[in-house]
Length: 136
Length: 91
Image (cartoon, rainbow over all chains, first blue to last red; front, side):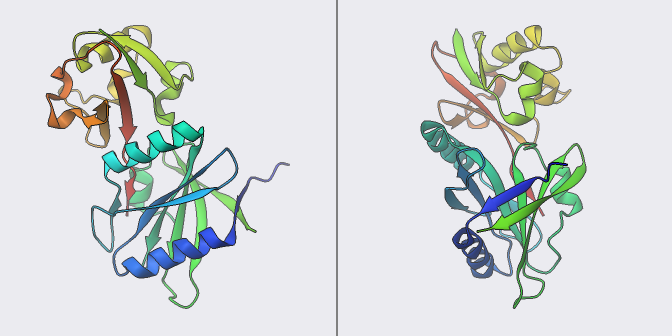
């Protein structure tokens, strides 16, 4: 059996947690990118919803980052956002608005502020599939 | 007019897996019709039945959101780059 695994360096995890804490109580969001299977860059993005329960990345910002990645032959490997008061599991809204089947959706939970939790999921056709993460 | 249309991962299955395809027409809407003619079912993923761009989809021409130009009636020039981007959003 092949176990799917998302490898990510610890400093990217720490940066996602820091971003989540800075934006709390609102949700934060951002993009992880790199060559296939290798996170090489983290892009903080603006949550245009500016809300504790919603996030949205400005389409023009997505386009700008996508074009930058294309020049490097990199991909959008994952999107991250925070849940400031709930668990690290996709909400009904997350599932409904998941339009990127090949990108992992990472959720940073600050439900326990002292013990942030990050989990990753592929969201396809209304289905939730957790991806095991390896922090290196 | 022929433009290069960048296809997001969500829609690549509709166009045989291609990351980008060439499409022709005087406007963005006509270019989408051109794709639809070759890949039936494509357009309904981007356009609502009432003929407007779906709420959680953006279409750009050379980096400009067509919603702020003439939407599907935005004219195309040879060599334009069209990008279709689904939203990144949730709760």
